[in-house]
Image (cartoon, rainbow, N blue to C red; front, side):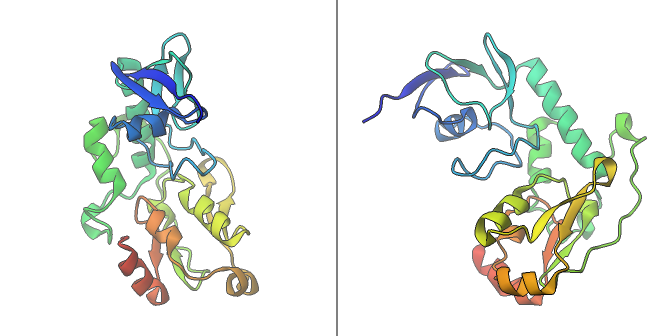
Length: 227
């Protein structure tokens, strides 16, 4: 049996297996660290949302989903610097996001709504990011199973990882760069028929309402408990 790593997170002694990321060690110990792009320890850390920042004594600020635990490590999850970074990251998400929650099919089941209270940011367009482009982007209906709404997408990458892991081929992937970045749902019908099982995992794992199932996916998503 391998020796466990001992570290301190917010004055709590925590033990974890070597190689475990700080985020998982904290969550397993009942210490919540905000996150949006984390799926599981078995998946390659994506580090996209930047909400899981923590401060490690002697090292500074790190993303807890990518940083392995070390023996004697001292971690702080709620320092002023950490809270400031999280609020800034969260504001960037909602600066682009369609905030008409009442018209959203995932209202009251959205991770952004839940996290807003956690990071103490109101769900409204932040004053300090009003200069960013917020023009409406047409829905993507090229995939027969899924409708993609880029206006509600936060580019967390969870659907990309889940889809690629399940199908072994990128039916969903990122396209373009900078302000133009969005998801591309493969328009290759032969690829979709061959690889996409219409399982609904991408819809279930989406923290917002960016991915909406078509009728063929409805029963799958409902049974899985997703939104």
